[in-house]
Structures are given as C-alpha cells and as structure tokens.
Image (cartoon, rainbow, N blue to C red; front, side, top):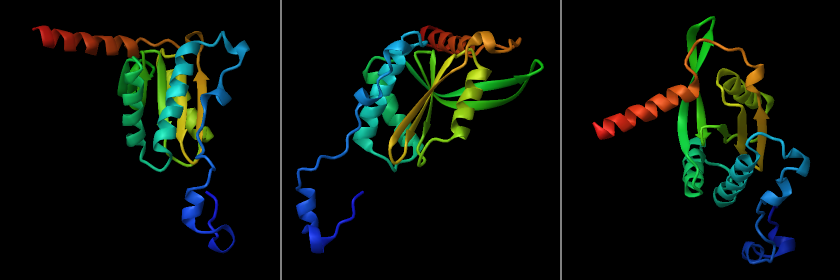
Length: 187
C-alpha cells in the first residue's frame, strides 16, 4: 500500500480519485504452460485457479480462513462443481487407524483443496497437503493462500507410489455417506 503524503501528493481524496487502478490479479498471468497438458485433472485445476482469483479479487486479504472457505464454496458451486467441505482423512499405520486430518475441501471427488489465510505459503503448508494426498487415493491437491498477494501451489502424488492398506478408501467412505443420505431421504 503506498504511503500518503499530503504535503507532496495532495489530499487523500485526490489519491482515491486518481486513475491508478486497483490491483486485480488475473488468471492469464498464471496459466499453465502448453507442455503441462499431461497433468492430471488439468482442466479442473485451471478452473479452480480462475475461481480462486475471482474470490481473492472480490474479498482481498485479511479475513479468517473460514470466510474464504465459505466464499470459495459458493463460487465453486456456482460454476457447477461438486464440493465437500471439512473432509475427515483417516491416517493408518500397520492396519490400525491412528488419527485423522481434516482437509478443507474436495472438488468433484478428485482434487483436495487446502486454504490458508496467513501472509504467505511455506513448506509446512505444502507438507500438510502432501500428507493428505499420501493418506488418500486422491492424487491432486491444491494449496491456496489468501495472504498479502494471492498464491497457489499444485501438488500431485500418484497412487502407484502410495502404500496400499487394508482400510477403507476415502472415496469409498464418501460414497457410503452419500448412499446413506439417499437411503435416509427415500426411506
């Protein structure tokens, strides 16, 4: 934010009425390269990135993570995407459940989203998302920062690299919950 110096630049009202546009962040500057066409869920992740910038441009920075999560959900669902929020991700060790993570959002049951409202992304945030991907059969995750400037990272962890356990898979358990909800509605 530029400093206002009334002595040399005029009044604050003059600065507000100047022709300097508000900084809007555009998706075009962050489009994936042509050689990235082999990325898993490329079209979906590009759509999510565009929606992220819409939300950031409208809200800016400074709100709590829960505010961005609610706004992001509204924006994603308005574009026809299926969203699940606050997804419990079980952690297994030697066939025993030892804990749970809570991922922020799951889009179309194939891309995990983790939102941050701090100043910037750091390696701990990426490690957190990578652990979510390791603990599930979801292969693509996205990390979004609603900090001073918008940031995102796309992470992938192929299922072929993951150790298989005997526990229920995340998507299988989500499908069971969906089926139970349908059974409750019809029964």
